[in-house]
Image 1 (cartoon, one colour):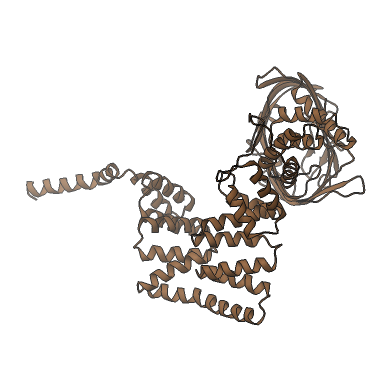
Image 2: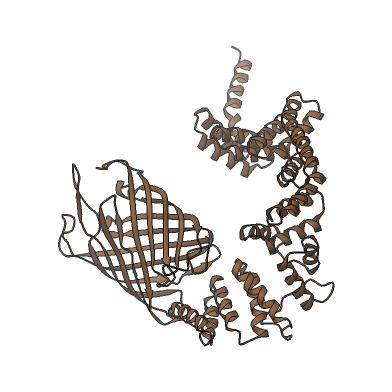
Amino acid sequence: MGKGRIGLLLSAVALGATAPATAQALDPAFAPLNAAYQALRANDYDRAIYAFRQAIAIAPDRPAVRQDLAYTLLKTGDPEAARDQFAEAMRLDPHNEQIALEYAFLCYETKEPVTARRIFARLAEAGNLTAKEAFENVDRPLREGIARWQQAIAQAPANFSAHEELARLAEQRDELPLAAEHFEKAWRLRPDRRDLLLDLSRVWKQMGREEDSIAALVAAWRGGSPRVSEQARALLPARYPYLSEFERALALDPANSQLQSDVAFQRRTTAPAEPQRLKTRSDDTPAPAGGGAVRELGLKSFEKGYLADALRYLQVAVEADPQDSEVMLKLAWTYNMLKDDRDALRWFELARESADPAVAEEASRAYRNLAPSFARFRTTLWAYPIFSTRWNDLFGYAQMKSEVRLGSLPLRPYLSVRFIGDVRGVVKTTFVEQYLSERSTIFAAGLASAPLHGPWGTLTSWFEAGEALFYRQSPGNLGWLKPDYRGGISYRKGFGHLLAAGSHGKFAETNEDGIFVSRFGNDSLLYSQSRAGYTFRETEFFGGFHAQALWNANVTADAQRQYWANFAEMGPGVRFRFESSPASLTFSVSLLRGAYLINDYNPRRPNYNEVRVGIAYALTK
């Protein structure tokens, strides 16, 4: 081989060796894309998805990468996420028919038939045979359904269901004027179905009738059920509606008494052609006339849970009549639910002086419950006994804690006595004896953060050091005393209508706790407990029986991966209290199905059933 040919060969080898490096240097997304395709070849879809997302973060304008990510997401059974990636790919490359077809099919499969039909129609007009066939499959049932319901309406014009079904089919077929006409007719036939105003607003907005759309939302907000009202308020602009929008809503829904009161109040307090502005305590102008109407608006807003509105109206109402103790009480509760406990305490204190015994009693009880949080010294006691059929045992958990509030400092030192125990003490299995609780009283000194409140929930943290005094010996506990160090972070959040006086409706809540315990081999544990369900109205008998039906979803895990600390469980339950009893006394019964997440060294079955009965009580002084 000649020297010239050898030189060419060496150059080619060198070029081949440096090509990946050159490509990587020229393409900043080369490394994650290379990793993504390697993961695909290994059928490691999770790693591929992660790498594709890294590549998109670096180079977000590549439709091919989004397309490949979408196909990978489909392999993992996530059609909604795949649909969203195809949508982005189509936006980046609107002329790619393959991407558009995939997006349209996924829209149809994920309950977005209107978007699917539009894309199929566009592609069919461009001559795509697959799209033409798909369009006909989507459009034919809509055409036939519309014709069928139009015939039914011709025979029975007052048929509510026919108008509603015709409107929904017409909206899916993009016949928006027809859809709007029959949504409105359906609502006129059934004014109690205010959810139809949400549908009507949506269609009017698509037609460009923005003012009519807002009017329908205002009418649904001010006259609907709590669920419909909340949905409507979320769809309205972030600002408060203008007087003209209230008036247009009243023209649409003249029988709406709530709107009648709103419009009357706004006309009294708003100059013509100006957006309305409710007067607050910071205004220098005198309180407006018409306090009775404002009072009614405030009380109704509070009852329906519109706290921002209730706060504004109640402030104006109490200015108009400073002796109205009921308004004071509701204003106090509004501040309390808005996490402004300092102002809440002030209004509870004023309402305590009411001549109405019921108002005075409720305000006094609330004041006593809230005042300790602002005291320099505060003592709390909580107890939580539980009976479990899984262990056929009664467990007891309790703590008494006295803390010092150091002005505005975010940390509070405390002394604590904690009890953790059970009745049986030990369960004998085939291989070992299993102890069911710590069986000790723990004396400790600690430091806790002041609760951090926000719309996202409540967050606290704490750490303590102490000594555990055992009331029953076991092989794992040598002697009667043992050092005990523990600490944690706790998060709480509730949504909707929780188990409180006067509350009824849907609710959800979650408790998340991360805890370090030295006596478990310096282990860290995570407890996640969530519940969702419905709170029923309290009864007028049995001491004001007030109940919730709920679904439990609980997960426990630990850092050392011990079988007893890693399990998940879920199941139905009920929780109830009596309005005549202390507010913090609550009873619960749950039927749970659980599974251990780690079964190494587990002497029991991997699954279990359990009936769990608990009583919770807390007291603050």
